Image (tube, rainbow, N blue to C red):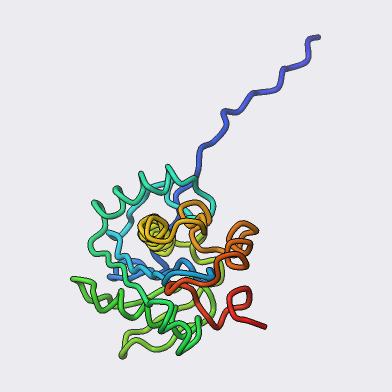
Length: 209
């Protein structure tokens, strides 16, 4: 008697994240990019996706290639009901600290939305009330809900684009590659060239110990 062969299963593709944490409501997902950088602003985005929106490619921006992020930026900006990006520069980061600056950038992005959300969902575990709009913080939210993932992609791509421009203004720090993060080449350039007007002077690696 012949034994039955194993049934081969087709590899499944990526599964789309839920569009939002709350259904049937205009919910804005918020995330930031550039919090750990030594130079440049912190950038935040707010995105409202259509209810039930599904795109299996939209995920935490850190899990995506630069090319895929750029492709998805166009898709998100086309498909979102509303989206906005906002910056808080390095000088204000030094004045109010990076946590407050990140939350301020998210509030500014929310201010710029053309549609008022009825609920806000934020990546991480820290936020401040935005008027009387209810909100939820979610650790690893950019890998949990589509609207936060979409916000992470917009924040990352818009900030990277800015750092490319600043790299042309201040060559030598390799910002076009490291985007202002504390990489070995960036730290070496700081030791050799000193800080620029775009560096965060209160950050370790920039400030004189």
